[in-house]
Image (cartoon, rainbow, N blue to C red; front, side, top):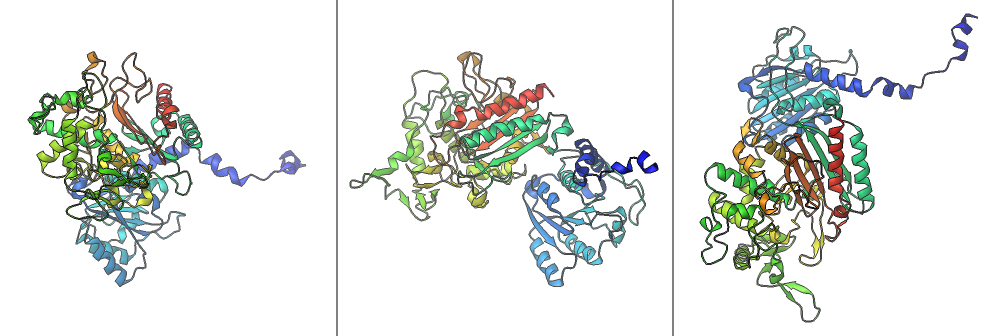
Length: 620
């Protein structure tokens, strides 16, 4: 009878498969992340090494020892170029020697120690051999030591004074690994205190740092509506199913927090290679605001360039009608320049028998040499003097009749000449030195095949007209290709993550990670509309939302008039909105395998996704 009263006669066993989901909700995950972040403890930080600054001065290696460290390494790679090593706790003397030799190339080593936190009875002590290895590394480079273990584990160290920075993360969970990696680069601040006394540190010891870089968060952390994800997924999946593009990347950041960074689809319609967040795309005309324009802004800050001077002040144009063109007009696309010149056509000759267009023998070679140094594509090298011929053709081109908004690439060929003349080095090296390296942008840059495996590069067109090959890692734009892949108007490749860093620097008026790259005054000037009275929506180099009554444009209707960015022919868009402190990146290879595929444009995929973001912002 008692069993009946207790309901035991109708006992049903619990469904163990759903216990985890019932207990581990979004709310508990968010709480866990907050607790982990607040607990991170910085016990040592010589010369305020953390958060890491001036990434262009650092050659960083990461050495992991112990349990799994995948999430830690993945998050580290979002911030800077890092070479990763893993070594067993039972390493041999020869393995130690090999590792120390390899690490001699680096001036900063992040040596992370990972102990199991599966239960309280797992051993937490750090092996003596690990301590010996770490002390050896500390003699040849600066070391940052994150410890994913019980706080008493640091008692295993004979001494800690050789460590430049020491972080106690307490556990080896995914959340702890990701938060610790972010703290090293200043994505999040550190303000925890050690709760116990140890051999080297007293209870409540703990130093503080500040957040200086973009942070990776969930939408819930910043109270953003999560149904946004499903809407974006739906738009992208529909576009891919209708072959508007084989794949893409979408990144959204609010207030410096990257809360959506997702890749979709494949590199090609054959569906062999899935798109990953680390993969890169041809940015096309985003190159203008990610390479040429920031260098020009830097030159304005240094009083080496004036927007209201004529082109003739910086280039030898005395015998042409281009000498009196005002630079501000050129950058706002109202200088009457011809929109486009097919420079490659003059380098081809028609075969009298087959009718095919072939390369002129005097202009091209299959092999690199001093005479043919400009690599146009695989096995195609252009004569060293032909880029000068391109500038000559621009000088001799006819100006349009009316001074009105008419988009043209030609000015950027001349800006490239001006920049390289001033700095006496190629544009790709200038941008690396001024911006990309110090911003920690491993993936953004020119000539991707020199630094990135081709498996990570989304292909563009199967070029039957000019280069007779599938373009993968070689810039799609013919003019930029004829400049060896380094154009002022095209040539950059990137993933969404790295491009977001540059856009965030613009949002912060030229500042990022404690460094000033550009003045607030220059950023404000370049990103504002210049000639509204001429029905011209453009800023200085930057595109802007459409004017009232204007159709088309790169954005949805909800963006603020302060917003700015640029789109690219290959199916790309980078946009920043200072009023809403928002960044939106869309990268794709919609022109694969045919540049005439206009479905991405016809379906308004980029602007549809953007509208969903703003709708979610309004209903946040």
